[in-house]
Length: 327
Image (cartoon, rainbow, N blue to C red; front, side):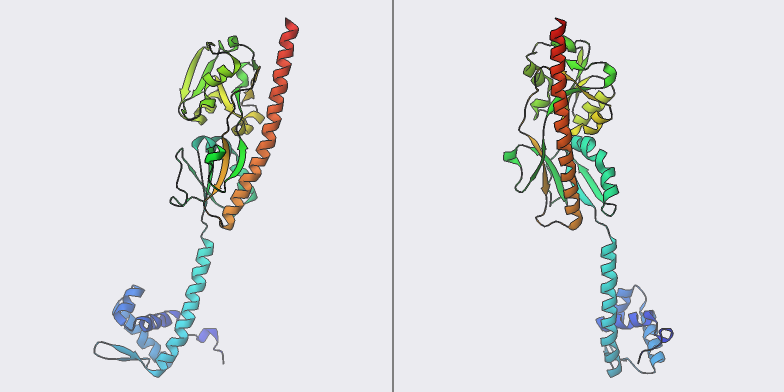
């Protein structure tokens, strides 16, 4: 026969009784409940008074259940455990663990961050944590879920997914009033913005100038930076011409903050590409969601890059034709 809910015993009294039964000690139960021993004893007496039976027998240094106490403990302990399990599961479900993504500082600033609003709109239930670093992180050791690595195929981690390759072109702010680099003299009125990353020579101006046969070109001056995103920030501020990594500059090119400068010859070529690495073979569902989103953005980027490259080649050809017509 069910008891009306209004007549159910106080949960505080049941909790105190179960705590004593689990420890078979009023002292230890008081420690578990963060209350005094006398408070626990009062709870037990109040419960016995309500039920009209003794639940515990007290010895000099021990306690034991009466038959009624043993029966109540078995039922109450099971019910309290179910309640603890249910509350624990709800709390775990309510805690949102962010998906941690690591990538270089430049990639985070130029490619990932401008696209995060799109991710938030598509997946509002998934939190992200961006751990930008130019060090190669230990994914599992650092609690990282996804990494975007920039390397050649032969050094890409096992299971890595290729996102896109690398194409470099000269870029500048439209305010500089320059559309193309046709000869070494094109550089005489402009500063070159130089990235000092020693591991990536194809991002250096001397490599690009050599690809054009302009080893002796004399620009107005050079500004050097140790972070690639600083190079691009300076370019967008109209401070000079940069070697642009086409895959990272889509938003800046599309909204007119930068433009590709046509040239007679293609720039340096590299085998490096961007790779997506998962820390675990079977990731959480939110990690898998973030990985799929990154891949979809990369596919869209590849299409954009192809279109930009085609336009740059067309512009290069048109520039050469116009120069020939003026001779």
